[in-house]
Amino acid sequence: MTSSTDIMTTYGPTPVTFVSGSGTELVDSEGKVYLDFLSGLAVTSLGHARAEVTQAIAAQAATLTHVSNLFANEQGPEVANLLAGLLEDATGHHGKVFFCNSGAEANECAIKLARRWAGDRFAVIALTDAFHGRTLATLAATGQSEKQAAFLPMPERFVHVALDDAAAVADLLATGEFAAVILEGIQAEGGIRVPQPGFLPEVAAACREHHALLIFDEVQTGMGRTGDWFSFQDEGVVPDVVTMAKALGNGFPVGACWARDEVAAAFEPGDHGSTFGGQPLAMAAARATVSTLIEIDAPGAARAASEQLRAGLLDLPGVVDVRGRGLLLGAVLGESIAKDVVSAALDGGLVVNAVRPDVIRLTPPLTVSAEEIAEALRRLGMALTTILGEPR
Image 1: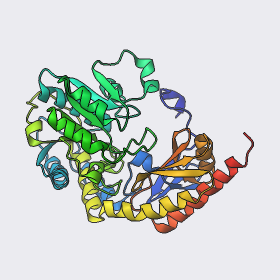
Image 2: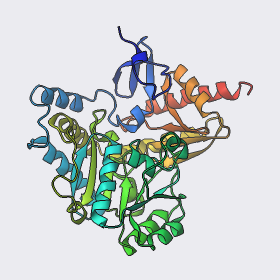
Image 3: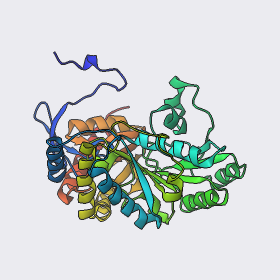
Image 4: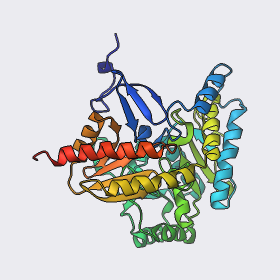
């Protein structure tokens, strides 16, 4: 007998069971069809059941799934080459890639690499309202006290600074105690908060001045979603380390940590590892996904669709602002009703989620059509009208 009661209660009750999907559509166990404007938390950027990815996984599963990192496979170097090429174009630096299975693991790798590279400096600066993962080290870097409270004490020497306070970052770095700064180009889980212009370049300059690494967490913002391949490109910032995950496998668990060559050289054999990281099945999914994202010009697709979605959101009742870039957008509401609106939208066949009491996140596939955007806006508008019309 199958029962959800056999699963640990780390998540709240789930209102819907999805059984299939195609492109931007999802189908639940009752046969109801939904528009997916969440993409599994910005994961299925090519839409559900994308043929290139499906075929690559099936072919690899029939050939070789796993051998461990004690041996080489053919697929890993190809994916590393694709990612290194994108990042060399974006940063001007050649680098090397470590493969893992998730964004949290990619950030763990980045933190360990920073400590290895920095020698006796091991403190890390992060930002309030950031989100970097659920492992103890990445939770310590996550600037959300409500997520940390049940697991205190946190690992030491993670210091948090408010978003946009570049002077505070520079003052901390000037003490000579810090190995790195880790941040997101857009704080997605923090409410789709975009740094003020100039903040990221100022932090990058302070890192260079004080010989600290700049780590960009591109787990949600990367692979074209913000209208650039990586969010740091918006202001021409050049990081030392970049972490990726979510969109890399279009639903297959894949994470990666890239570092420029001289930083990556700090790791020696045995310093870090992952049993499943870079295994053939995951790499087949990533190779197909990244190749297809390049083929469709993912950043261009995100920019083009963003204009229609942003403009339509601003016309909806109760929406007072739209934050974000590309297809990582947050509809800011005039009241703290986001959860109620999300629930009503789900009833109406639209999948979105609330990242703050007054912010609804929209991260549709980068392949979303103009017709699908128009229909999603209609359904969200109906949900807003329903909730705004109810007495509170």
